[in-house]
Length: 281
Ligand code: SF4
Image (cartoon, rainbow, N blue to C red; front, side, top):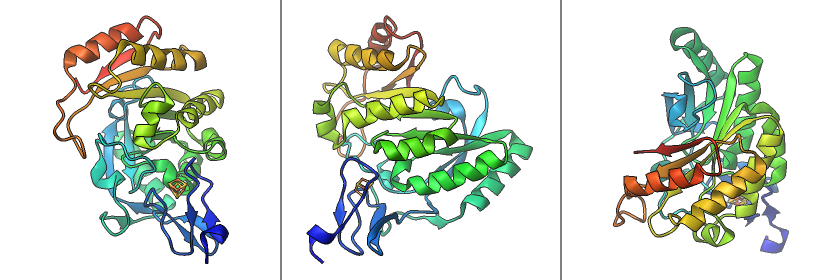
Protein backbone atom coordinates (compact mmCIF):
# COMPACT_ATOMS: atom_id res chain seq x y z
CA UNK A 1 0.00 0.00 0.00
CA UNK A 2 1.43 3.40 -0.91
CA UNK A 3 1.16 6.42 1.39
CA UNK A 4 -1.41 7.90 -1.00
CA UNK A 5 -3.97 5.23 -0.05
CA UNK A 6 -2.95 5.20 3.58
CA UNK A 7 -5.42 5.97 6.37
CA UNK A 8 -5.34 9.55 7.66
CA UNK A 9 -5.77 10.17 11.39
CA UNK A 10 -8.33 12.93 12.09
CA UNK A 11 -7.52 13.37 15.79
CA UNK A 12 -4.83 16.07 15.83
CA UNK A 13 -3.37 18.64 13.44
CA UNK A 14 -0.54 16.31 12.44
CA UNK A 15 -2.98 14.19 10.38
CA UNK A 16 -0.57 11.25 10.19
CA UNK A 17 -0.92 9.16 7.01
CA UNK A 18 -0.44 5.56 8.07
CA UNK A 19 -0.15 2.33 6.14
CA UNK A 20 -1.85 -0.74 7.62
CA UNK A 21 -0.16 -1.65 10.94
CA UNK A 22 1.85 1.58 11.16
CA UNK A 23 1.85 3.62 14.38
CA UNK A 24 1.41 7.41 14.38
CA UNK A 25 3.75 10.09 15.66
CA UNK A 26 2.06 9.93 19.09
CA UNK A 27 3.00 6.23 19.44
CA UNK A 28 -0.56 5.59 20.63
CA UNK A 29 -2.67 5.31 17.47
CA UNK A 30 -2.22 2.85 14.62
CA UNK A 31 -3.78 1.96 11.27
CA UNK A 32 -6.02 -1.08 11.49
CA UNK A 33 -8.61 -2.20 8.95
CA UNK A 34 -8.19 0.99 6.91
CA UNK A 35 -8.80 3.30 9.90
CA UNK A 36 -6.57 4.87 12.53
CA UNK A 37 -7.58 3.49 15.93
CA UNK A 38 -6.41 4.05 19.50
CA UNK A 39 -3.83 1.31 20.05
CA UNK A 40 -3.55 2.40 23.67
CA UNK A 41 -7.29 1.90 24.36
CA UNK A 42 -7.73 0.50 27.89
CA UNK A 43 -3.98 0.29 28.48
CA UNK A 44 -3.11 2.16 31.63
CA UNK A 45 0.36 3.00 32.90
CA UNK A 46 -0.59 5.08 35.95
CA UNK A 47 -3.44 5.14 38.43
CA UNK A 48 -3.60 7.20 41.62
CA UNK A 49 -6.07 8.99 43.88
CA UNK A 50 -4.81 12.58 43.75
CA UNK A 51 -5.93 15.87 45.31
CA UNK A 52 -7.67 17.75 42.49
CA UNK A 53 -5.31 20.68 43.13
CA UNK A 54 -2.46 18.46 41.88
CA UNK A 55 -3.94 18.34 38.32
CA UNK A 56 -3.73 21.43 38.76
CA UNK A 57 -7.40 22.40 39.05
CA UNK A 58 -7.84 24.93 41.82
CA UNK A 59 -11.42 26.17 41.58
CA UNK A 60 -13.50 23.05 40.93
CA UNK A 61 -14.50 21.07 44.02
CA UNK A 62 -11.45 22.32 45.99
CA UNK A 63 -10.26 19.99 48.73
CA UNK A 64 -11.55 16.90 46.94
CA UNK A 65 -9.60 13.99 45.49
CA UNK A 66 -10.02 12.37 42.10
CA UNK A 67 -8.96 9.02 40.71
CA UNK A 68 -6.40 9.83 38.01
CA UNK A 69 -5.55 7.58 35.10
CA UNK A 70 -2.97 7.71 32.33
CA UNK A 71 -1.94 5.60 29.36
CA UNK A 72 1.05 6.14 27.06
CA UNK A 73 1.80 8.40 24.10
CA UNK A 74 1.74 12.07 23.20
CA UNK A 75 1.42 14.04 19.97
CA UNK A 76 3.93 16.73 21.04
CA UNK A 77 7.69 16.49 21.59
CA UNK A 78 8.41 19.09 24.25
CA UNK A 79 12.15 18.84 25.06
CA UNK A 80 11.20 19.84 28.63
CA UNK A 81 8.55 17.11 29.09
CA UNK A 82 7.97 16.54 32.81
CA UNK A 83 6.35 13.12 32.28
CA UNK A 84 8.42 11.56 29.50
CA UNK A 85 8.56 8.06 31.03
CA UNK A 86 4.99 7.49 29.86
CA UNK A 87 4.13 10.29 27.45
CA UNK A 88 7.14 9.78 25.18
CA UNK A 89 6.81 6.00 25.03
CA UNK A 90 4.83 3.60 22.93
CA UNK A 91 3.39 0.15 23.34
CA UNK A 92 6.73 -1.68 23.25
CA UNK A 93 8.42 0.54 25.85
CA UNK A 94 5.67 1.41 28.30
CA UNK A 95 4.53 -1.01 30.99
CA UNK A 96 0.78 -1.10 31.03
CA UNK A 97 -2.20 -2.98 32.43
CA UNK A 98 -5.34 -3.68 30.45
CA UNK A 99 -8.63 -2.40 31.84
CA UNK A 100 -12.12 -1.37 30.70
CA UNK A 101 -14.26 1.73 31.28
CA UNK A 102 -16.62 -0.33 33.48
CA UNK A 103 -13.74 -1.63 35.62
CA UNK A 104 -12.35 1.87 36.08
CA UNK A 105 -15.79 3.27 36.91
CA UNK A 106 -16.30 0.44 39.44
CA UNK A 107 -13.01 1.42 41.10
CA UNK A 108 -13.93 5.12 41.03
CA UNK A 109 -17.27 4.31 42.67
CA UNK A 110 -15.65 2.16 45.38
CA UNK A 111 -13.19 4.98 46.11
CA UNK A 112 -16.10 7.42 46.27
CA UNK A 113 -17.64 5.34 49.07
CA UNK A 114 -14.38 4.68 50.89
CA UNK A 115 -12.34 7.88 50.39
CA UNK A 116 -14.58 10.56 48.91
CA UNK A 117 -13.36 10.28 45.30
CA UNK A 118 -15.34 12.63 43.02
CA UNK A 119 -14.71 10.91 39.67
CA UNK A 120 -12.04 10.23 37.09
CA UNK A 121 -9.28 12.47 35.71
CA UNK A 122 -7.63 11.67 32.35
CA UNK A 123 -4.03 12.78 32.73
CA UNK A 124 -0.30 11.87 32.98
CA UNK A 125 0.25 11.15 29.25
CA UNK A 126 -1.74 13.04 26.56
CA UNK A 127 -5.30 11.70 26.97
CA UNK A 128 -6.60 12.97 23.63
CA UNK A 129 -4.44 10.63 21.55
CA UNK A 130 -6.68 7.93 23.04
CA UNK A 131 -9.81 10.07 23.25
CA UNK A 132 -12.19 7.16 22.58
CA UNK A 133 -11.21 5.63 25.93
CA UNK A 134 -11.76 9.00 27.62
CA UNK A 135 -15.21 9.19 26.02
CA UNK A 136 -16.24 5.66 27.01
CA UNK A 137 -15.02 6.09 30.60
CA UNK A 138 -16.62 9.53 30.84
CA UNK A 139 -20.02 8.17 29.81
CA UNK A 140 -19.77 5.46 32.48
CA UNK A 141 -18.58 7.92 35.16
CA UNK A 142 -21.43 10.35 34.38
CA UNK A 143 -23.98 7.54 34.47
CA UNK A 144 -22.88 6.90 38.07
CA UNK A 145 -23.21 10.56 39.07
CA UNK A 146 -19.49 11.34 39.24
CA UNK A 147 -17.29 13.98 37.54
CA UNK A 148 -14.81 13.85 34.65
CA UNK A 149 -11.65 15.96 34.52
CA UNK A 150 -9.35 16.33 31.51
CA UNK A 151 -5.69 17.36 31.77
CA UNK A 152 -4.38 17.88 28.27
CA UNK A 153 -2.07 19.74 25.92
CA UNK A 154 -5.26 20.66 24.03
CA UNK A 155 -3.68 20.04 20.64
CA UNK A 156 -6.53 18.21 18.93
CA UNK A 157 -9.03 18.75 16.15
CA UNK A 158 -12.25 20.52 17.02
CA UNK A 159 -14.48 17.50 16.27
CA UNK A 160 -12.76 15.53 19.04
CA UNK A 161 -13.17 18.33 21.58
CA UNK A 162 -16.79 18.93 20.58
CA UNK A 163 -17.63 15.28 21.15
CA UNK A 164 -15.91 15.17 24.53
CA UNK A 165 -16.87 18.61 25.86
CA UNK A 166 -20.40 17.73 27.06
CA UNK A 167 -18.91 14.89 29.13
CA UNK A 168 -16.11 16.88 30.78
CA UNK A 169 -16.83 18.80 33.98
CA UNK A 170 -13.41 20.37 34.53
CA UNK A 171 -10.23 20.70 32.50
CA UNK A 172 -6.72 21.99 32.73
CA UNK A 173 -5.25 22.80 29.32
CA UNK A 174 -1.59 23.67 28.76
CA UNK A 175 -0.96 26.91 26.93
CA UNK A 176 2.74 26.28 26.60
CA UNK A 177 3.75 29.48 24.90
CA UNK A 178 2.48 32.72 23.40
CA UNK A 179 2.74 31.98 19.68
CA UNK A 180 3.00 29.47 16.85
CA UNK A 181 6.75 30.07 16.94
CA UNK A 182 6.85 28.53 20.42
CA UNK A 183 4.60 25.68 19.29
CA UNK A 184 6.92 24.99 16.33
CA UNK A 185 9.55 24.14 18.94
CA UNK A 186 7.31 21.55 20.63
CA UNK A 187 5.62 20.30 17.47
CA UNK A 188 2.07 21.56 18.02
CA UNK A 189 -0.51 24.08 16.91
CA UNK A 190 -1.06 27.26 18.94
CA UNK A 191 -4.41 27.88 17.22
CA UNK A 192 -5.67 24.36 17.96
CA UNK A 193 -4.84 24.73 21.66
CA UNK A 194 -6.56 28.13 21.91
CA UNK A 195 -9.59 26.70 20.10
CA UNK A 196 -9.75 23.81 22.58
CA UNK A 197 -9.84 26.25 25.51
CA UNK A 198 -12.62 28.20 23.77
CA UNK A 199 -14.66 25.11 22.86
CA UNK A 200 -14.52 23.65 26.37
CA UNK A 201 -15.38 26.99 27.95
CA UNK A 202 -18.29 27.55 25.54
CA UNK A 203 -19.63 24.08 26.37
CA UNK A 204 -19.85 25.05 30.04
CA UNK A 205 -16.82 23.09 31.21
CA UNK A 206 -14.81 24.57 34.09
CA UNK A 207 -11.48 25.41 32.38
CA UNK A 208 -8.11 26.31 33.88
CA UNK A 209 -4.87 26.87 31.95
CA UNK A 210 -1.26 26.03 32.81
CA UNK A 211 1.93 27.58 31.44
CA UNK A 212 5.18 25.83 32.36
CA UNK A 213 7.83 28.55 32.39
CA UNK A 214 11.06 27.56 30.64
CA UNK A 215 13.97 29.94 31.31
CA UNK A 216 14.94 31.83 28.17
CA UNK A 217 11.97 30.49 26.18
CA UNK A 218 8.71 31.86 27.58
CA UNK A 219 9.72 33.81 30.70
CA UNK A 220 9.64 37.32 29.23
CA UNK A 221 7.12 40.04 30.07
CA UNK A 222 5.98 39.95 26.44
CA UNK A 223 5.31 36.20 26.60
CA UNK A 224 3.22 36.33 29.78
CA UNK A 225 1.37 39.41 28.51
CA UNK A 226 0.41 37.56 25.31
CA UNK A 227 -0.65 34.43 27.20
CA UNK A 228 -2.75 36.39 29.70
CA UNK A 229 -4.37 38.45 26.92
CA UNK A 230 -5.26 35.33 24.93
CA UNK A 231 -6.91 33.72 27.96
CA UNK A 232 -8.71 36.97 28.81
CA UNK A 233 -10.09 37.06 25.26
CA UNK A 234 -11.93 33.82 26.05
CA UNK A 235 -12.93 34.63 29.64
CA UNK A 236 -11.54 36.53 32.60
CA UNK A 237 -12.86 33.71 34.76
CA UNK A 238 -10.28 31.21 33.46
CA UNK A 239 -7.55 30.71 36.10
CA UNK A 240 -3.92 30.61 34.96
CA UNK A 241 -1.28 28.45 36.67
CA UNK A 242 2.24 29.76 36.14
CA UNK A 243 4.44 26.79 36.88
CA UNK A 244 8.10 26.14 37.55
CA UNK A 245 10.10 23.92 35.21
CA UNK A 246 12.53 21.30 36.55
CA UNK A 247 15.25 19.73 34.38
CA UNK A 248 13.85 16.64 32.65
CA UNK A 249 13.88 14.64 29.38
CA UNK A 250 16.05 16.48 26.82
CA UNK A 251 16.69 19.47 29.09
CA UNK A 252 18.45 17.86 32.03
CA UNK A 253 21.28 20.40 31.73
CA UNK A 254 18.98 23.39 32.21
CA UNK A 255 18.45 25.12 35.54
CA UNK A 256 15.04 25.02 37.27
CA UNK A 257 12.97 28.15 36.80
CA UNK A 258 13.87 30.61 39.59
CA UNK A 259 11.02 31.11 42.05
CA UNK A 260 11.52 34.88 41.64
CA UNK A 261 10.70 34.52 37.93
CA UNK A 262 7.44 32.77 38.72
CA UNK A 263 6.53 35.48 41.25
CA UNK A 264 7.26 38.21 38.70
CA UNK A 265 5.16 36.55 36.00
CA UNK A 266 2.28 35.81 38.39
CA UNK A 267 2.28 39.44 39.46
CA UNK A 268 2.30 40.65 35.87
CA UNK A 269 -0.47 38.30 34.67
CA UNK A 270 -2.53 39.27 37.72
CA UNK A 271 -2.85 42.72 36.16
CA UNK A 272 -4.98 41.09 33.46
CA UNK A 273 -6.55 37.98 34.98
CA UNK A 274 -8.18 37.79 38.44
CA UNK A 275 -7.02 34.22 39.17
CA UNK A 276 -3.30 33.59 38.64
CA UNK A 277 -1.51 30.98 40.74
CA UNK A 278 2.15 29.93 41.08
CA UNK A 279 2.90 26.23 40.63
CA UNK A 280 5.72 23.89 41.76
CA UNK A 281 7.15 26.63 44.03
S1 SF4 B 1 -3.28 11.66 17.20
FE1 SF4 B 1 -1.37 10.56 16.81
S2 SF4 B 1 -1.72 9.35 14.93
FE2 SF4 B 1 -3.33 10.93 15.07
S3 SF4 B 1 -2.56 12.65 13.85
FE3 SF4 B 1 -1.99 13.04 15.98
S4 SF4 B 1 0.08 12.19 16.22
FE4 SF4 B 1 -0.77 11.33 14.32
